[in-house]
Length: 472
Image (cartoon, rainbow, N blue to C red; front, top):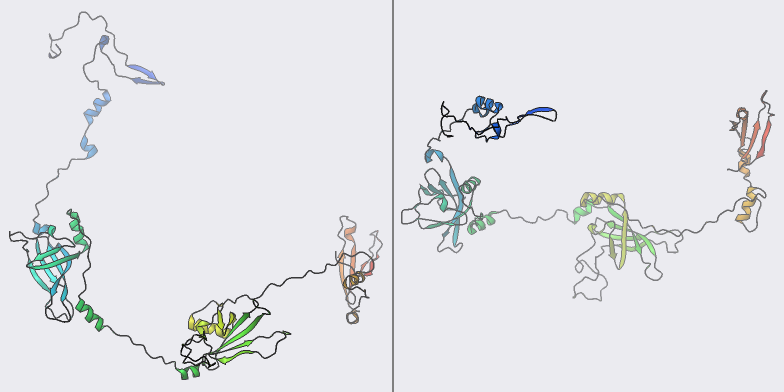
């Protein structure tokens, strides 16, 4: 009955139906009027069709996809491009070499000849070129012209998939070793899904290496022009002066003594002089070591030298002291004595800056902290007598009369310094009081006088008698 068309005479009513209630579709939710779709038909019957709202019907009626997504584009197939045009001027470049055996030659057994292999993608043809070397004596340039190289006897030819780094390429009985390629070749092979091996170094030709080494400019040691005559002319009266100390207090009756080390640039001789202090109890003769060339190690001589000779010559001693051995902060051993160099003069600093590039000439501190003895503390003034009388009891066992400076008294007896002052008091009446300070330079006494003022209510006059006033 459900499949019949909706025509007159095809509709049938259920005579047993007594409930014709309409489903509730209007409601109020959160203060707003809302509509909901009916879940059942008239009288609670089942609904057999899809329910579409008016908004959805309006959307279906006005739905135009081209207004939202635009007009659909029909993709046309790519035009056919032949390989001669697609791969035109695209060449894979490989670098390699091959070895050529040299017969009946005492200088070489083989030659290493570097090559370039060019693979043209448009027609799968190859070409081998040899790099030109200067004066090689071998015809170089194009080894194999451009064509398809045969791979075997079955008529197959080489393809780009047959060439990789670290492999041999056999062409017409010659074996070529492929070592490297350019960046474009590596990128193109990897884009085709091929794994490119690591690059190898092309070995150098031993004969070319020997010839290049022989053609290099040889260096010779040029004899210096700074001979003894030039040294005597330019370095005459130029002396390096260092200040050093010899600390021998680790031994019994040892002392810490100061010396001056003089290095004469004219003939590389040295002289050591002692710096005497007042009342040091030593002879005033300052020279400790006379001027001569001092060896670094006097006992570093050959075993054939007879020990009965006390003096050494330049034949036996090789290493003598040089300016590079004398620096601030270094300890040099001269004939068994360790001298610590702590400073130098200005000419020496300029010489080392110019010739050795030294700029740090901070002197070494050799001063020692001495023990400080306890100082006598003066007891406070007890009020008996004057301050000078009480001071004499602290300075001497037998007190003496304080001595006056009569020269000062005679020169400055008539000189008086006068100052005007006011009284610093919280009372308003005292703030108006004025005073005259009189300072006498002859005996350092002070007199204070208050001049009288009219209608002040204060009697002026002598405020402080002439006396010495102590500081608060």
